[in-house]
Image (cartoon, rainbow, N blue to C red; front, side, top):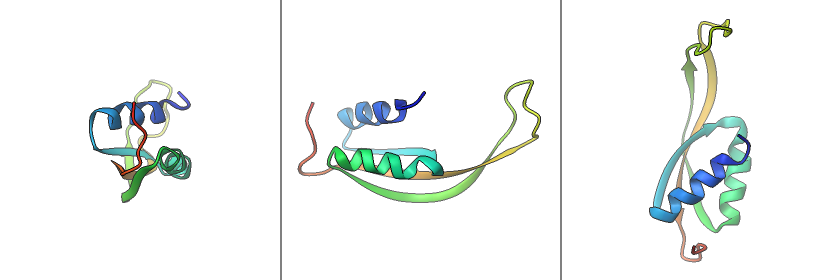
Length: 82
């Protein structure tokens, strides 16, 4: 669902000082912007493509290629506190 990735990252960074996360390439700008608004340090670690097999009976493609990005999120000196 929309916005759940940010909720997950907010919870993860609440219990750890460094978090790695995988996202679709098309959402990278949005994710980075939101995390930087929380004063978190964000770095792109890897950009790649992954192949996803069909998971549902109605999926017709044998494999679906998705561009992904791996980001590293770290608390900065001025990071928000819960």
